[in-house]
Length: 179
Image (cartoon, rainbow, N blue to C red; front, side):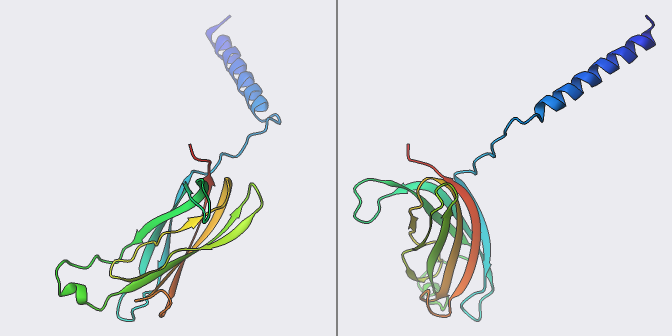
């Protein structure tokens, strides 16, 4: 057998093996979609409730965790929020802290658990008179599974309800039982 015939035969064998592997790989074997991560970070922009200040962006992280429900005696799986924004931190000292840049915040969470089919709404604690606003304490009990969340951060001048500006973020995460 010549070298050319040997190369041609080898190429044919390799091509046949590749075709067989491709057919077997696509032969009705179910592939499950991977579960989303247990944490998702979202960004959303907001107009500033202070007419003299610029617009800004919130960064919100929704994570799988556990929290004690009202009247409960055991921790339950929950979506926990954290985050901040790009507003400048006020400088230290007494005089700058008396400045006119005060904010209030509140967070609304609408959720849908794809695994259980349940949906719900939660409202965070409220924060007022902060020069560097953040995400107030929020606990959202969704049960375990794949959860879609819509987070609305309401930022107001001094209090969340005074000239509120809404920043809306969306994401998906896996809520898992505690370890």
